Length: 346
Image (cartoon, rainbow, N blue to C red; front, top):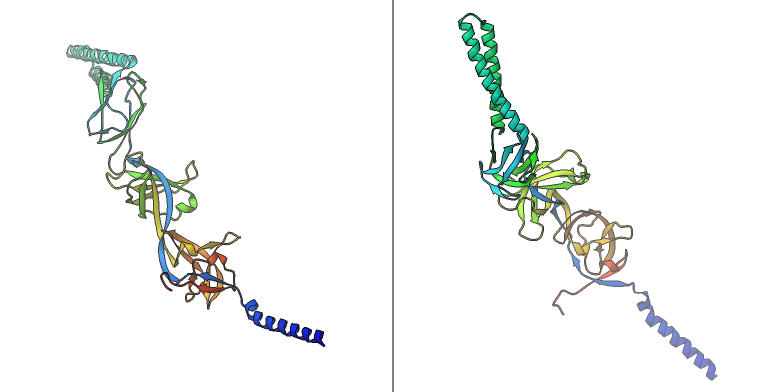
């Protein structure tokens, strides 16, 4: 009789234990989280590019040698700022130019003598009026050729002066160098009206238009400055990029200085969320987690713009459901969420 009683007691004890443990075992899992309200808003859409400050190509002056000559003296160096009319270098005629000038002088002397002689003959009716006209034509041609050589500097040393005020950006010669007619001597860029030249891949360049606002930040430190897009190319260059010029405020940056440009191409409108709310799934697609009546729900989204730790997103979102921040990476669809107490609360 003792053994059956022990068995009954054991069965009753086990049943009582199962009853008491049942609710705990059946409770669904939950995650402690923080939440934030879903807020509609907008952020600027930006395209980022890097480049260097330079003068616009249409305003750069390339000075060339008017005739074959020798470089006698160079008065400037790259990076130097010069005033309009300032001497840049001096050219002296080379042997060929000197010979051409001497021949031109001799031709003028001979033409003058021919005119005088023909006129004397005409007075005595030994030369015709047509012969006088022909002699005068040869005289005019000889003098024009001599004057052209003088203007080109073949008659002696000739200074090359700055046609406009600017900055010497490149120097192609040095003292003693021999240059031919049309050879590049130096490049002069205006000191004002500089641009930041950048390149964009075609799909980014399509969003950029003239007049877009730009935030320019010099590479290596320094405060940012504002600019505007003044040119966007309509073709792809040899590097596979579309050229874009951004106007730089006067005196803000130096020619050749590198800088980063953030071009604002428009405003993205959607829901503005903290970057911490954004997660990336195994498929590489971004998503967020909303708490719908205390139950986690993953929502796939598109990121339209990002700035200063915030993102503008769009998707099949419930405007009334809060967005999960901390703890969101632990949640799967259907899991319960527990709201963490406010900071400083008991």
